[in-house]
Image 1 (cartoon, rainbow, N blue to C red):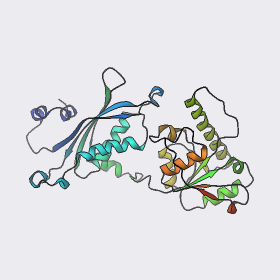
Image 2 (cartoon, helix red, strand yellow; image 1 turned 30 degrees about the vertical axis):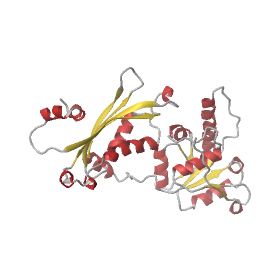
Image 3 (spheres, rainbow, N blue to C red; image 1 turned 90 degrees about the vertical axis):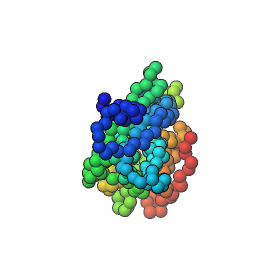
Image 4 (cartoon, helix red, strand yellow; image 1 turned 180 degrees about the horizontal axis):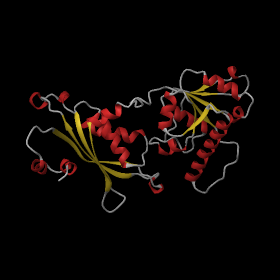
Length: 307
């Protein structure tokens, strides 16, 4: 019997398979079920399905049992909080990605030595389908030793700038970009939709995608006007851009569609910029206007944009 099967089996099965010697204690959370929007297929978007978690953690021995000291143990809450936190960050396509992130968060606890993670979808077929992974604390050390890895990738506080169309197509655009480029904080540019009239659909969800794509078209228009402006669409790209001083232009479709706490379906481009600012810990959006650029800056606080 392999180790993964043993980890999720009953203690008597484990006892029959393990060799003599010092064994690590295990704590477990079993059949923890959440309603989640997850999946790579279009039919899984906008739909919540039951996901069941079974997680077993091998922990370093302590004196907790002798002293009855709760502070010496790895709490069950450590496991459930890792699940809830990773589900809250963003909508994911793959169970494999979710399992990796949960395992990594649990293993960041000094007492955790090895973790077994099983995640199953309960509503896709008459039975269940899912993934199982095993990770150890050395896997975490190998990842964190990478000089490009940063657990606090979202702690940077960027300057979020909203560029309206009249400025993009004005003679003052280069002056504005010069000023933005000199700002000390990492800067993300958000935009209106392109000036072209987008097509319309009978589907509300289709129209939402068309509206987001119209903003992305405008991002490429701006990138074509100035090579300093780089179009980015994923959190990974944005995290790298902020750490490396890149002047980024936000293409919103992927992040908005993959968000757990999505902005309102009626949110306008400036509202989306405010939602983006809140996602990346910026406390306001700076809206730029036409005319002498030093006289036209104004600040818009974040409205409550969540459904």
